[in-house]
Length: 154
Image (tube, rainbow, N blue to C red; front, side, top):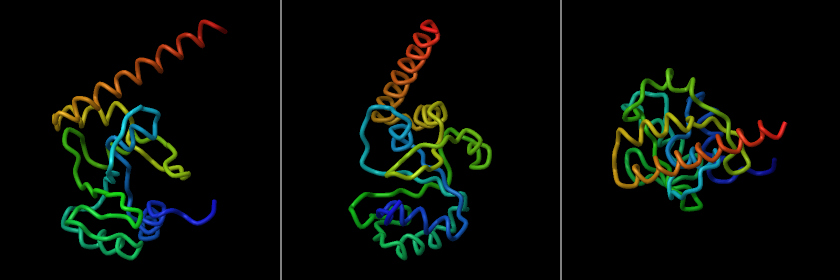
């Protein structure tokens, strides 16, 4: 696959330390085909929040710059948010059952499923979350319609 990009290096560093993660939020939705945009990447880390220094040190070793206790900036400027609990959802363990595989940056990664992303965004309820919920719903409706049309063609 060649040399990993800045995000790939961060993921490899987390994996080398056996730290479970899921990509969540709009980055995960976009990786599953939803049309939208986002600036940052949200990583749900399966560690207690008090372990944030461990995660930040791993990110530093992977070339990131620390911006805050839960935010790093990759060498290419992309912000990555480390999340330790997700509003509106269960534990990492229970929610990881809803993970799917998607491609981000040429790498297959585990991302939170669309319905679970919607559930969290509804619980957070910011203006942009309401928009994201609608974008995901539109995508799911189109996907259902495409599947129904394919079924009728058989």
